[in-house]
Image (cartoon, rainbow, N blue to C red; front, side, top):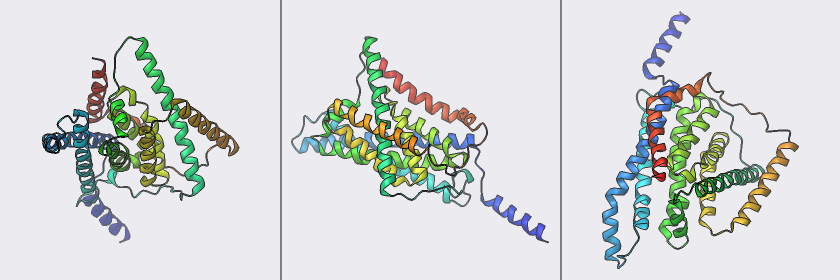
Length: 315
C-alpha cells in the first residue's frame, strides 16, 4: 500500500515539474542575456528620437549623441531587465515549473556582519587590482601593435561627473539591472548544477556581455559578485557593483588607486594565511563534466555574437 502511494506521489510530482538538463539550462541562461540586450536596445532605440526632440525643446539642440543614447539606456535597461525577470519568474512559478530553474535546493548561507563586509571590500580591492593590471596590459599591447582602439567607456566616465543622468545610469541603474539579470535569473537558473559552475558561467557571460575588449577583466568582478550572491545575498552583490561603478566615475589619480588596491591585496593575503585558508562551507557540488553544457548551441551562438562585437573594435 505504501509503495503504491509513493508511486502516485512521484507521478504527481513528475506531472507538475519539467526537469531541465544542464545543457538546456545553459542555453536558457544565454537566452536571458540575448533577450536583455535586444529588448533594452530596442526600447532605447524607440525612445531615442523622442528624447532628441525633448532636448531640442528645452533649448539643448547640441546635446551629444552619447548623452542622448545614455538617456535612452536609462529607460531601455530597466525595461529589458523587467522583461527577462518576468520571463524567468514565469518559468519558476508556472503551472509546470522547470526543476532546473528552482532555487529551493539546500545551500549554505552566511549571515552578513561588519567584519565579513569589510573583508568583502578588501577582496574587492584585490579584484580591482587584478582588473587594473589586465587593463593596463591590454592598453600596452594595443599601443605597441599600433592599433587605434577607443574605449567606449572613457567618454561615458568623463561625462558622469557633470551630467546627472549619465551618473545615474552608470552608478545605479546599470549595476542593479546587471545584478538582477546575471546574479538573479542566470545564477539561480544554473545553481543546482553546481554553485561554482553557476558563478563561472554567469561571470563569463557578464564579461563578454560588455562587448568591450577593455572590459573583459570584469569577469573577475563577476566571480566576486557571484560568490557574494550565493554565500550572502544578491543585495550585497548589488552594493559591491554600485561601489565599483561609483569609484570608476570619480577622478581618482591612478597612483592612489594602485596603492589602495595593493594594500587590499596584501591584507587579503595576510588574512588568508592567518586563517589557514577559507573556512570550508557546504557548496552545491558541480555535476560531473558539467562544463560540457557550454556546448549548448544557443550558448555558443550568444558567445559568438558577443565576441564578434569585441572583434569589431579592431576593424
